[in-house]
View 1 (cartoon, one colour):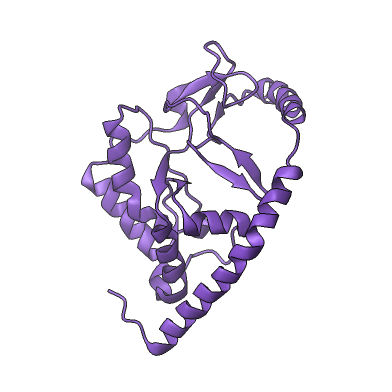
View 2 (cartoon, one colour):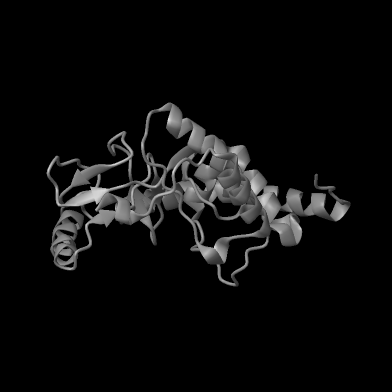
Amino acid sequence: MIAFTNVDLLMLLTIFILLLVLIFTSVAEMGLSRITRPKAASLADQGHKAGKALKRSGVTIDSTVYANGRSEGTARSFDFHGAPAKSRWRFETDPLVEVADGAFLEVPIASRRVAPGFFWRLAAMKKLGGARHRAFGDGAPLALERGDLMRKLLRPTHSVVSMDGYKASFLGRAADEYRARGFEDFVVIGHPKALTPYSLDQLDAFLGSGRAGEISTFATYH
């Protein structure tokens, strides 16, 4: 349990006020990101060209999609709504469109619906959680733009299932949900530089609980 000091509470209040200010500027940025999003036809053409190169190199398995994932930032824009409600499928050029005999296999990253409170807790842990919640790496992820940040802090969104940082807290619950839906595959993303002492403890507990099932590698799908 974390004991909050007056300084900690003042920091949280300051963050809250700043976030309220950001709300009023996020709407315009979200609109701009829609305007500047690349055309679908252009993306499809790029996917077709990349697909040929990947097939020539023997790369035929992809894990990019996660159910209901969405980002409207100018630096990182994607929308995975409409992806097949499966834990694997084949495709040809667009990983969101299933093709029975497609050359590529999509094994999507596991996804979970999370409430805004989760991201408030995540922010608090990063600021106030001490060494236990400090990443081993000295880098930083690509920062969320205001539109995406406000969406996560103000309404339910979907997140990848990850062993990184505080997101490792829902590994077991996400696995149980996937099993209840009858999915065969449960792909957990992770980055060594983003692991923390807390996330490693959560991962160890998850693997030791038996809820993870059989551990597989991509070689399983060839």
